[in-house]
Each structure stands twice: as C-alpha cells, then as structure tokens.
Length: 353
Image 1 (cartoon, rainbow, N blue to C red):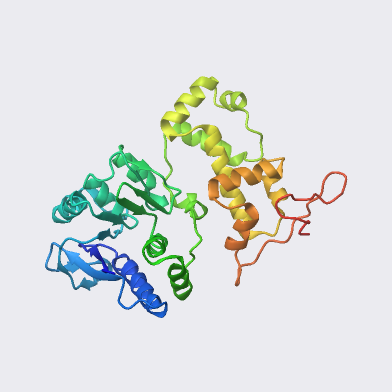
Image 2: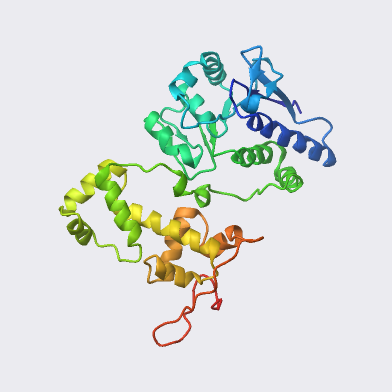
C-alpha cells in the first residue's frame, strides 16, 4: 500500500498545537497498524509553508519544508482575539491562500482545523458549501462569508472534497474519522484508546457557552431577550410578549428577526436549554424538576427539545458534564407535586431524592 501524503500548511501566527495534532495522531495510528500487521507507515507527513521561516503561536519557530502536492492538505487555525485585524491577517496570507487554491484545483483534499475555515473560505473554497468552525466564531464566519452554509453544531463537515472542523479538539474527531476510513475501524478504535480520545462524539452543541458569545442585535431585540431570560418558566405567548413591548405580533416577529436573526421562540428555547444545562451540571435535581423550572410542564417534551439542541438526552448530558472533583453540588431539591407524592421522571427513572 502506498502511504498517503499529508501536509500541514504552517503560516505566521497559526496555533502550533493544531499544526502537530493530526500528524501526531496519524503517527500513533501507524504504530497501532504495525501491531495489526502493517509492514509500513500508512502516512507520509510534512509541515509545509511557502515561506522559509514560520513563527507560530506563542513564538514557536517551526521547521518547514517547501509546499508540494499532497493527498491531503491541512490548514490549522489561529487566535482570533478582539484586537486582531482579520482583514489585515488574511491580506497578509496571499501565498498561503494561493497554496490552498492550488491544492483544491489539483483535485486533492483540503481540511481546515477550527479557524482555519476562515483561510479556506477566503480562498473561495467554501462558497455554496456546508462548513463548520468553532461554535464561538460560527456566526462571524457566516456573516463574513454569506455564501457559506455554516453548520455550527457539527464537529466535522465534509462537502465536495473540503473538510472543516470545529474548535481545537475536533481535529482529533477528524483524525479518527480519517483513520477509520483509511485504516479500518479496529485501528481507529485502538488509536482512540491509546490517545484517550473520545471516538463517539457527534456534535459540538453540548459545549456551547452563551456567556462567551457577544450579544447580537439592536436595543429592541436585546430588551426582548432580557425579558425572556428573566421569565424562562412563563409559557410562551407571542401576543402577550408583543403587548409587553407595545407592538403587534407581526412587528415583534419582524423586528426581532431582523435584529437577532431568529424568532423569539427559538431564542427562548435556546435560553431554556442553557439554563437546564447549568442545573444539570451543578445540582442533583431530577430532570422533571429542571424541566418545570425552565418552563416545560411535560418532561418528555423538555427532553426532546434538550436533545435537539445538545445532541444528548438530559440524563446523558449530566453523566458527561456534571461537576465533580471539588465542585460542591447544590442539595437535592424536594421535587413534590401539590399532593405530596414524589413526581416520577420519565427521562431519569426513579426519583433521585
């Protein structure tokens, strides 16, 4: 078997860890493959650049070789800080953008890690394509490149020869998918075990943290959002909401949608899920109690909505994300109906109190 050639495109300011992450996992897969009887490495790896010298994030100086045709070109991400001039950054990466275009024009695969999607989009490869990136910057990508269909909940998206991944650790999700395709599921599974990498993730939605996302919208929609955040347990009533802000229902939908890019109901559902995630992480309350707290009288309906937004059922989410090791969980809430009988939770089995 001829080894696949995999090149990583290094450039000034790229994240050093994202330069070496995928090659290191592929190297591990080659070692695992030898245990399974492979007689030679499955991959030829190279760190490439159109520049003679590259200084990555943190001042790390990288040894690079000249750009050459490869089977797979990987584009790492960079630090998108509030002070960064993205236009200037991309304008200064002309040689790298030309290398990305050349790779695509040759019919070979291009893969971006995290914010590397901005380089691939700037090179014109994502127009009309589905793509993903870090959930924190997905809206930024969608606004800057209107022709790109951004799927912010996805970990890895492949569309017509171009692959994009979510933030940082999603490079491992891509690497394992890649190993599974080229080496088989057994080697991929063993590589994941060796690296202590989760090979069963399907979405980045459970990791969304609204506190880190800049508020979007104008004064009207921000006011509506504040009111909804303060009234999560109140049943959604569009006419009542419109009356609260002295507008018609049609005006409410039009103005909120124009400023926020979604409907009030969609925002409310997401806000309820955010609150529920916090309670699942930090308390031992039953799922039914949490559902009631965020406005769902039926725990089954809540579980369905929660799963749609996070990719996990509430009980599964709690098992993965509940805070331990020194974090103090809130005491178990008394979850009783008015008749004093403990409420059964269809998602979590017997009452936890």
